[in-house]
Image 1 (tube, rainbow, N blue to C red):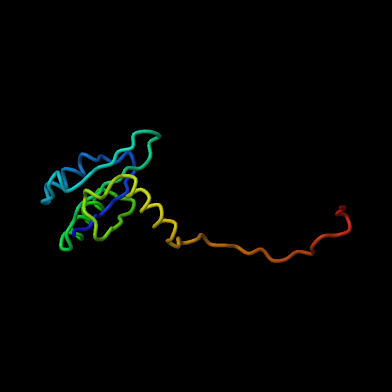
Image 2 (image 1 turned 180 degrees about the vertical axis):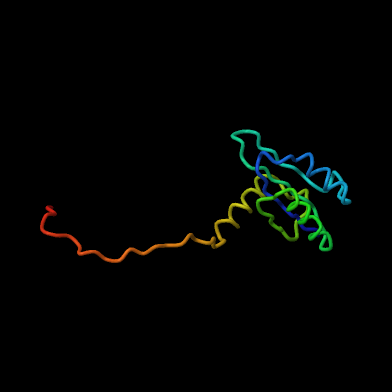
Length: 119
């Protein structure tokens, strides 16, 4: 069974150039799906069916076209990769990841409440 490499892209990135890059590197039109969501200008998703030896090539094409993030879904073919499943997979993976937190400043203790505070 093949794998699916999904990429998340900003809505202003030209998906036609991405399609041309995929096809010029040997992927067929039937090897990828571009899920466009034209309402509310949200990011779009591209799914590419890849075999083990094609993963790096496909990932470099997606990265070259400024993918925000790529996700490898193993043991899945392109027929199983519908928009809802891919979107939920990305959502769950992002929830599980531990993101870098910004620098946290810890403020030292003050004198606390004084007699002017009334309850």
